[in-house]
Picture 1 (cartoon, rainbow, N blue to C red):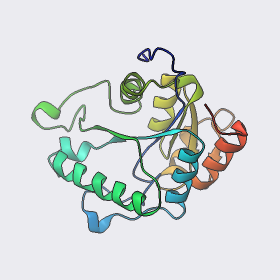
Picture 2 (cartoon, rainbow, N blue to C red):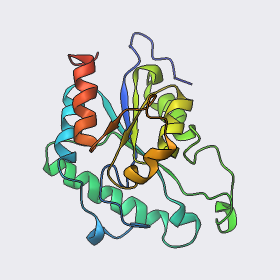
Picture 3 (spheres, rainbow, N blue to C red):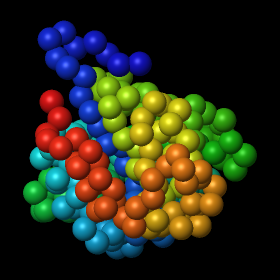
Picture 4 (cartoon, rainbow, N blue to C red):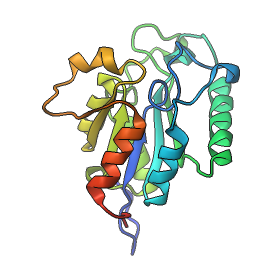
Length: 199
């Protein structure tokens, strides 16, 4: 699914779930005043970027599909998230959002789509648009759906125990998927595994 970039080696990425992985879990988060990073996350993202990884957010936002808030609200929150990261000396490279729900969506959002995690559609789209080597990349999230999406895309999947992670861990085979207290510890392992900045 990668776009060929003549003369360029496909890049590695770390795909991040948003709610419960980057920021504190709050049901149907869409207001800036309710946003708060999980401690240590901006510095962890900065370390990934300094090591040469793309950092890409892939997030299910069925609250849009259910009519609770709009895509404009999501975009506004993501601009705030990005501004906060810039203040910490880093950025996210891209945001991918699935607004659909297969049974509770309203109007055109009522869809059994290919982009809603646990399907890998958002990861495939990002790989095509950014020239990403999925087999050399990671998916980090707090739900079984994140793990499934990453595995189906060919990434290595890591579960964090923030957000819904502690509850969801029983759904994920422990022998196959490493668990980490938070994104901070997951990033430590990713960087230690590579030993040096990837190309």
